[in-house]
Image 1 (cartoon, helix red, strand yellow):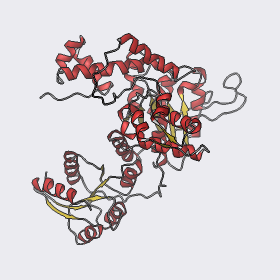
Image 2 (cartoon, one colour; image 1 turned 180 degrees about the vertical axis):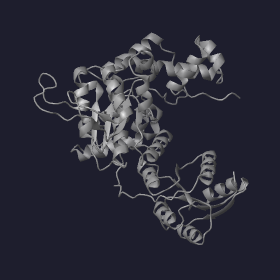
Image 3 (cartoon, one colour; image 1 turned 135 degrees about the horizontal axis):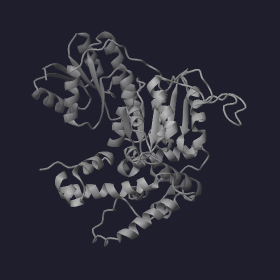
Image 4 (spheres, one colour; image 1 turned 30 degrees about the horizontal axis):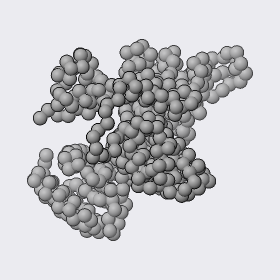
Length: 479
């Protein structure tokens, strides 16, 4: 890494000290200040090869300074940091020309890596684009898992890259797709969503590509398909794993050639849409089963985004509950608050229905709970027993339940929470919920040794490696 002069602006003295010491040990000349005014004066004087600035400064918002820096010295890279860890902050940092956005608290090793990339990157002549983003939050949560999603989304806003969103039902896949559209360069075009699982197989091609009059029995007039309706905007293909193979072939042709024909039509129509697909299925498994085209998967999976289940982001529950209570009031329901004990009880639950299930519970309590403050007892009455995160206790741990009974109880919960029947993909979902902890515990027992873990499980090492990747299993390092 070449040495450089790095300008650091942060009103937190401890952060200035940590960055000065860490970057100084790498041989860099580091100047630190607690104000945006001093930082701007240094930049006007021509000092600095790189800027690291906080967003919330005592005299000015750091994001407002970035366009001025880009205009005066377009070659000067800016790394923005903020404790306001929302999607909006990440998007604004990206829009205004920041090289990278890092949420606080940041990982020092990651920051050092970003500094290295920023110093090695070539200067850009392009100016940042402002779009007057409104102060609204399409996604809620400040957990580490959500921060990584925010940063990924911010990088994708100015592109037309095809995105594949993978996540269990209720994790917010359509919210992510809408955020990509709302803050992207196609924001002035339409956002059209279509659920592949909700369309009869024989109508999917007509639904997507439209049809001409007389193309089939009942086609009394020309009808525009979703591709045409979404022209100039975004087409969101939800539950893409449920698309029939014959429709997959036509979709692949559109992605390859950039044009399509209506059912019964002969004149090619240029496709002018950004494609965002989503699924709760393991598409690689469907490929192995011959149910999904591998070439289509790679066309759609240009940028994969995995949405974590709620049980992996329990720290977001207080913010999510507050958001849903506010939303309930706007919908005419009584104003409610929630006790700390009730929040703790919510964090002990497994949440098989994810954020959607949490919202339903909160809205039901807002509508039906008589007291102004929602208590832990009220929460317990709503939730089926089977916490995913054991409550802290000084007593002896409960005896292990019979495995078959536990799985049966879990399955019963899936059906109890969906009286009309669980959404499609129950087999794969249950299998993943059992398989992932099995692999995690085995790898923990072997201290991350995959050869030993494969032998212990009785499976091929390559199979284990694929499952680790597909199920996103954490592997500890050998020590």
